Amino acid sequence: MPFASGPVLTYVGLGRYRTVGPTVYVGSDDVITIPSDFPTDLATVPRIFWALMPPTGAYERAAVLHDFGCVTLAEGTCLLSSRDVDGLFRRVAREGGVGIVTRWLLWTGVRWGALASPTRRSGWWKDAPAVVGITALTLAVVGGAVWALDSLAHHLI
Image (cartoon, rainbow, N blue to C red; front, side, top):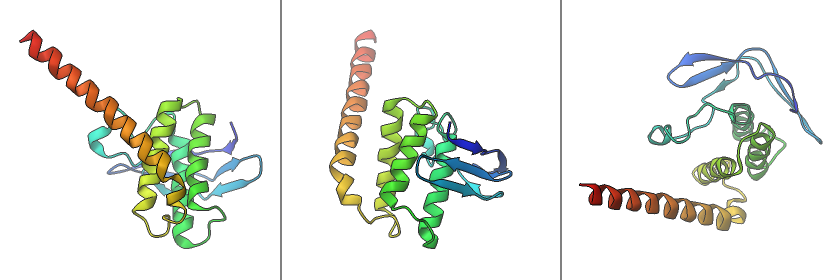
């Protein structure tokens, strides 16, 4: 894994964590250092979806790095674009062993989040076809599963 150190996290309450000691990510072209005591909520997954995708898991490291990228974007100190920060999130999740479906769902979520943030919105439309397509496919699969379970339950009753 390309993390030279960290992240080591401590829970501070209400779904919030802080890094303990520095976190250093070493990519093929870049080194990103996250300072100690950096606040994160890990993956910002709406609570209703936690049973399917909890905020913690194999993508924790990627989530800390992504949160740092989003904070530095908002501060104007990030050397990456919003698209690059989100792409790095997906890549680091892959490096951490996160499956392809989960990676792309997480990426889709952060790209939707970018649309809602003025500091992250730039370049969103370049990803819009993929984001909308993945969202539509996900809704179709979930809707089909709900319909199938409802039909099965109706026949069993």
